[in-house]
Image (cartoon, rainbow, N blue to C red; front, side, top):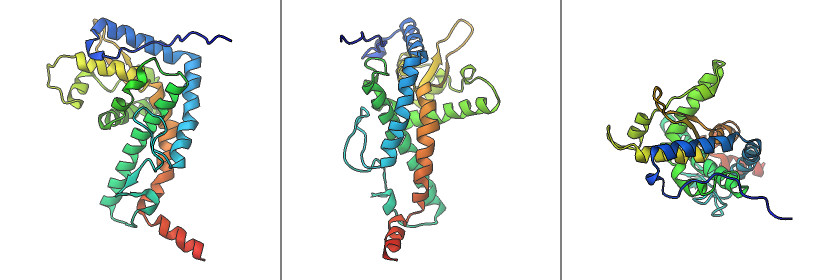
Length: 250
């Protein structure tokens, strides 16, 4: 039986050459892609697979979201989480929790995108931007976008009508000066929308860019990030392996 034609939209490999009109056209194509029932079903397929990967805690992802080294995907203070020293020092606990959240986003979102790419749920070439889309700056923006999303949900409003990030905010986040050329930042928006991590409306004559959390970010945060962080948070006080050993001796 012949394989069905690949109808996925395609993202250019060199986004800095993309002009404003082409960027707007690409964003509309990516938004349409993520609205399709088949794409949404593939996003849902990634949720339990990513969550199980993280909870199993025995591999790292590769930079493109594949299955990497045979070792825990997060180590703190140079040890796996069960081997952390016991502490009630609130500063240490706060730093451990911050690191857990950051790594859960970075490693989890990367694996989510890798799986979505494997099942042809991403636009063509989009996964080449996986590693560049799951770093510290993206985590900072993910938190900001999700805060707005959840606030709108709590207020009974449609999250699609919201926006908490402007292009000017991105200039500052990515350390560009005020008045800098918008090309690199516009390219970043196209990149993030292609992966479903952001959703965006290009500017019009009477409206600036509107940027909000995309479907991949929302589904990842609700049913991967949140339960995984909850699962591993109790390990942060330390002494887990020691308590297990003592229980085995009883």
